[in-house]
Image 1 (cartoon, protein in one colour):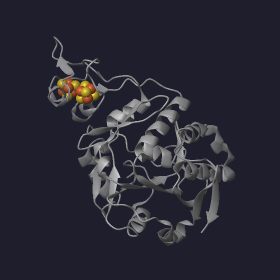
Image 2: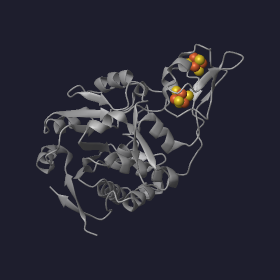
Image 3: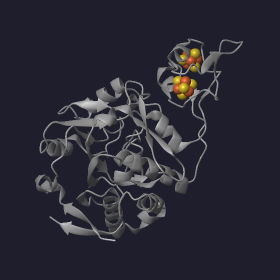
Image 4: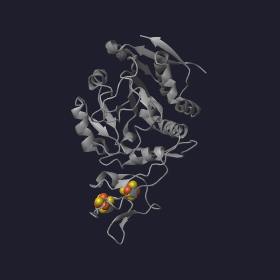
Length: 328
Ligand code: SF4
Ligand code: SF4
């Protein structure tokens, strides 16, 4: 198998990336992560701005998260994006106001035959996926594959990757306001004899809209822990769905390397020195190269058991783990 090219650029020479970028078919979506409130490790807006200025007509794209956060709705997420300095380009939240707009993509995976991605993705012919490479609690590391797989999924898709279990209403917290009953797209929620919300799990499609609208935070997902291997394989399968039928290009910022992901709402200590910036058209190779470079200077990073996502995406044909690292 031929080796993919992965280019290495120093952080203070980001201008060199311009010559590496392909000519993108339009519309182009630039997939980013705006960082959780309180987090300081995400890729700073100033670097993303520098790259976006190299491109014509880019739109920053993102999706809502599953858990309690300003990033749970498009309005809250946009406010946070602006707070974090991402005010230099239009922003498109692919899964709509409440994270429940999705499109179905057929895949041939071990865990999934269909993936539920943010519906807005269908209009983009090209993607530039800009990722922060760092540790991750379950995936071992988060980079391009995680940004593609989890990052483009609608809330239904995110839930499918994390758990196969349906939502539940906490009857102690529920005050019977009825907002979730009115907003459920498939009428899966009804009131029990005590005027508390109850979810019909046979009807629920796991869109997670009820989580967004409930003012009492009474709807929860009873997380069933799945192992690292299975979660990483599920993310890999969603990554293959996100890349399907569009030109994709990848930039990994291997800086601010911390143990956990940018969804944490507090500052985290760096575990090793900044490495630099990697650029490639192959998401598997760029993550493999990022991982190898971090391991080289911080051997304990291997304890994260990160190989499953690389192995499974390669098996799915998303790209090769073999690469040639070229210093620019
Ligand atoms: S009950 Fe299920 S289908 Fe209805 S809003 Fe909640 S997650 Fe969506
Ligand atoms: S929105 Fe929340 S508080 Fe209101 S009925 Fe639904 S679960 Fe209960």
